[in-house]
Image (cartoon, rainbow, N blue to C red):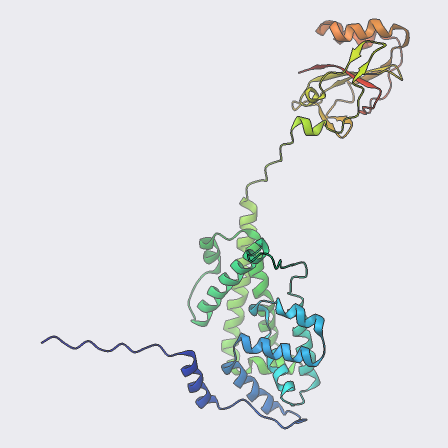
Length: 372
């Protein structure tokens, strides 16, 4: 006879779990309006909220507090703050105030400080387009980080042994996102570290008093390791990142703003296509108004280049500018028709003093000859 299969127990629903928790921890603390909290009452209240409240509850507590204070600007910002940035203890304090309890001034200061830190996490530059449901690049990046941190938080809650460095490596996180993970755990590590030292912050003491020194020390080491792993991974990935490829700009775009003279009828000169300047070894130009002839020789293997209306990449020592005056037509003919030897000797044959070559091309300048 076949054995009867055992009935599989169904998983407990959140509502069932909440009912069990409520039987164990009791109802939410109740205080008469204007009741001044004692340290014991505050500590017990914190413990109740810690076990019974989730992030949705914390958000509603902080939201109600801001509404009561008529802080509409902060209220708008809080809506865009992710759950992971919401300060739990600050939410508990806000709830106690909402229920009529009078909290110590230190607790109120703690609430305001943590609330300000959370509000600053909102993305001021983010603009959600109502016409499109598609998430922006920023949204996708933030969601990726939030999802990753959620997985890490689950490992922490389950007390799993893991390496954040390895987790980031497996997820193939870029350096910037890894830094965001480090920035998430950095303030938590700092707060835990402060909790291990003598402090006048009563809320900080009460928030971690239930852990005990041994557990608290273990948490400090764990969270400091998380920050160290994330920072190290971010730095290592940044080091091995391939250098960004330099954007290639076409020759047409480079010479688009070059201001030159296309033709000069009296001298029967026509400028050649300026795109040939890019990468050239030499360039001959003539300013028809100042009667100045200039030759530019490239300084390096990449040749001459153009930036705006200026020639760049030329060798200032070998490039020359001279006024040709009376021998204008004869000299210009040699520039146009002469061979390499003639061009090499040409500027030395012009009996005028050399003028500083500045690379400027203007509306009076004819582009005469280019050699590659």
